[in-house]
Length: 167
Image (cartoon, rainbow, N blue to C red; front, side, top):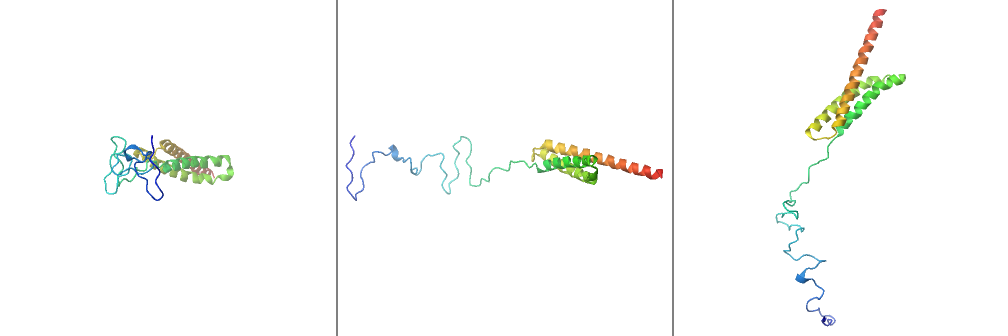
């Protein structure tokens, strides 16, 4: 293979580059206009083309992104935490007599657990949340704590009335 003579100083080289790619394609530069690159972006004002994956349209200029697919489990988990707290607030005064005032907070926490868990459970049915087990557990714990508090309150009223009638 023969090489052309080197250009003289100040003169542009002439002739084809022996190291150029056939067809004028420059692998390190830009594609020539009108190239068939399936991954290229559409020019301004042109409609989007098909994506390189067959049968799937490319994202157009009005594409807003996918909807928020992350479920919101806050109410389910809040109901569970309140259910656990209501049961703990009910049982703790039996273990430690100095904390009897906590028994008065237990029904409030139980009602809040029932409300939050019920709303969370309805969200799981609508597909907005996926923590159905946490919502059910919070609902059950809230109901158990509320029923236990009502029974204990009724028992306390019965004992007080029976003691009052005895004297």
